[in-house]
Amino acid sequence: MDLKNLISSVFSHELKNNLSSIRFGLEMFDKYDMSQEEKKSFIKDTLVTINNSIHILDEYMNFVKFQFRPKLKYENIDIYELLVEIKKELKPLLNEKYINIYIQNNNITFLTNKHWLKKALYNIILNSIKYNKTGGSISIRIEDSIFGIYLSINDTGIGTKTKDLSTTFKSFYPIDDTKTELGIGLALSKSVIESFGGKIHVRSNETIGTDFILYIPKQPKAVKLKKLAIAAIPTFILLFFTISYFPIYSQNYTKRESVKYIIYTLEDGSVLTYDKQSKYTFNAYKNLYNTKFSIYTKLLKGDMSLHAIKNKATIKVDDKSFYNLGTDFEIIKDNKTKVAVFEGKVKNEDVLLNAGEGSIFGERIKVVSLLPAPKYLKFNNDVLEFQKNKEEEKYKIIVALNKDFSEIKTTVFSVNNKIKLSFDDDTLYYIKVFGYDKYGLPSMPAVTTYISLNHYKKALQLEKFDLPQAMIELKNSISTIQNYSSLPYYELAKIYYKQQKYTKAINYIQQALKIDDKKEYYYVLFGSYFKLNQLNKLKKVDDLLKKYPKDSKFIFYKAVCLYADNKNKEASALLFNILQKNPNFKEGNALLSKVLMKLNKIQEAKYYERLSK
Image (cartoon, rainbow, N blue to C red; front, side, top):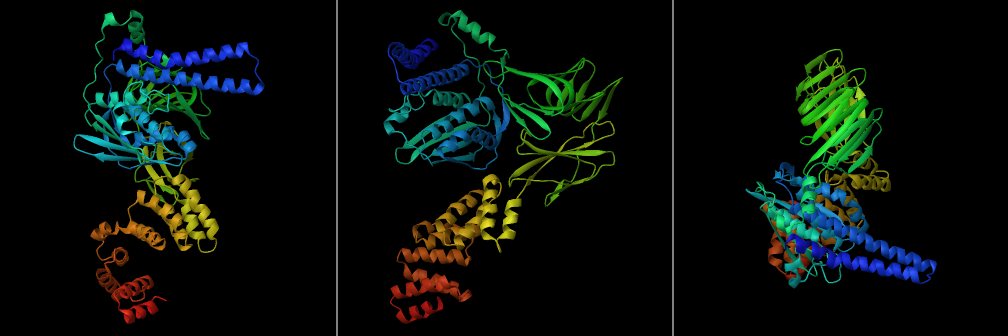
């Protein structure tokens, strides 16, 4: 479909209908008296139609922007981290429908255009949420191969009829007969993935859900600006896209505040951090295609850092301007201006600073090498320790919830190299440590991570004398731990198992197994299935016996499966083997009694029945 027909299709197919609906409603509103309730209903319906029209235009503009994109820029990205980023952005919608997303933790880094890949994956996952059932789930599996990666996105939604699968990725085609929304989002996803040299496939079942299978090459093919037929495109459209190539539009950003910092995360991925005492202004721009970005900030007083990497930034301090060249750096403005470069380069009219260099701008310029990053970071419970450098006069420790330090929880200043840190939640924390020299310049940063399990540890202490409070602490831990540790899930599953609440035990132990595949976790899972008489779910024991052929508990559950299949001789052989090593195994004795009874060995069966009491 060419551009002219594409535009015609949008406006004739949806926007015209929506505008006609709005016009008709306004005419009715003008001609007839309405009650207060009728007016409220009319306004509500009209706003829905307007919002739907805006949504159509947004989707359409994304599609057109990609069709007219210039040659894309590529960067190395971690696919797991990108998916987690998308999950966070969709969290309000997930919470609204009580949907869980499970992402396989498989950190694979490859070269791609992050912006457009994110849009493609976002649209597919959004589709899986919108057409999922309330309380459903989405599972994303990541598989590595020599030349590319495979993504499998499975949902528990309404599915699509087989005859409709061929239209799933067509522009402006509704996802099903009951919906009026256009399928521009999925059409864009297909266009992006195929432009990278990849493939996208969908399979669906109306009773099970929909699976999207994507192949994304690790080395994408070059994507060039399409040759546009000038005669077929009005001059004003060509002019519009030419001008829009330059960064003149404002970037979107999110603003967070911690106790000591104000943090801006920009649309281009840059992170600007200002000390709360700082005085500053900043503006951020982009072009229509989201391929060119720029930042301009003026620091009047205080401390700021910028993580920009590839995007252009200009920092004005007094009468001096600093420009980044792929840079992660910090500027301190007090009675003098101090600049420290951690990655890339910074230049101004007087000096070029490389990574690992700092400069003090006062009466005269002084360029020095930054001190090396603090070494041998380790934690002893919640106490951070590292090697002290005699040239370091003080330390700054930043604790954040994410890798780019855009969600800072706390900052601690200390003159000691042993610092007690406070962690409110059980989760993974990112820790950055700077030492400061006699000039007030920071060292190169040392970065480490720490998984806090304070609520979990408190629960272990409480279990013996206050079990209800221990369970509250475990649930507090689970509410924030995400997939960083399986321990609180396992501990809560064990408690529910002891309380004979086997269904709840299964729910929590399955979460633990998604994080860590440990054999003791299967003891709780299989034990719960056994107690609930769900014997068909014990079949996985065959795989585990290949890894642990002498594990008596797994052998017992294998015997249970054989007994359920009426293979009593094989079951009895396994049970005799177990009971020779552990004659007091009550459940083993009880099951052997049942097996022998089926084999018509009545006296032996009664003997083992007595041992099971």
